[in-house]
Image (cartoon, rainbow, N blue to C red):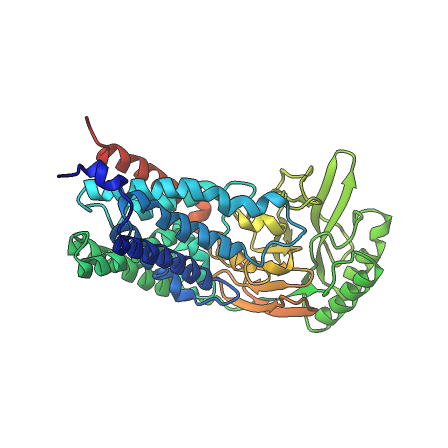
Length: 480
């Protein structure tokens, strides 16, 4: 008796098939774990280039086609879950915990369709098709208010300035694509040894290796050191009480930083609950005059219309410059779901350079820092207020905003992750304290230029991956 393909598919799996399925699921889970380890707090950064190889082998070799989508569902959704583990605390909206769960079904469908596509196309597009679609999807969701660009694979390389300079031309989408193509190239070599499926042509693998070499070589050539011209400081008070005690800490640490020569001092998001331009701001204006420093201060004011989450710069003459309103409210927090003063991108021309501010969650998006660069900024103060689980995961994003826009960035956070970053992404000073801590960061920084191709063209490479994915779909779609 001969069974049809459909009938054989419907039969219960034989014991050795069940063993292959279990091994395939285990390898997919291994990929989730390896990708998680590439990021903080473990931060074994090089794993990002091979983390998904076990998942790909499971999808194309171990799992039967009807189960092949489980590889993506476990490997990718598991990675997102691992990235978020430890980040979420009771301050987050409950629905944030559902993000990995919401990904499971779409990823299962995509993984199975992906396996079928490569089988039917003879694995001709194996090295590029899936990385291209993944990169395009990652780029499109980077504008979503609840997730932004978080968990993009490129961020694992935040402390490798020699590897990230070309993002000033392409944005992070090109680096994401290169990382994924490397994973698929290594997987192709493994699958070739297993003889199933047939690997793609060797020249395709050589092209990926060549692209990786060109990227690294270009990055090394672009890495520059313009030299420091300004001493700046970030104040991390070690508390977020918003009370007199915290204000006293900020004042004390600001005086210490000014005594150490700091000309620009940055305080955290919502340090005070009043507008520094009013009477209650007298003390802050007096502090700027006393220290001779420019103070970049975040403040939050609740109004019947919503929250004014703003930052401003106070000059040594006691002048309060035009306020900046947070562009991207962090809607996962109950006290940060509105930003009624958003819209303007003021840049202040001062004797120490052209200063701008952005606030906390703004740094998760590509647009805000770019607006400041286009308006002529050289240094961006970033008042922030992060949860404890973000200590190792938030400031790395600011490294890429600095490189993309060639701007110096100064992140002042309440307790966990303050940092001073130069226009080439070098972290000059940082205080990363998951348990919470007090710190005064002082560093000599260069002025940024804001003259990158990314500033001029925006995320053009991301849109290119979207267009290329659609073109590939049209080119390879099955005809009746």
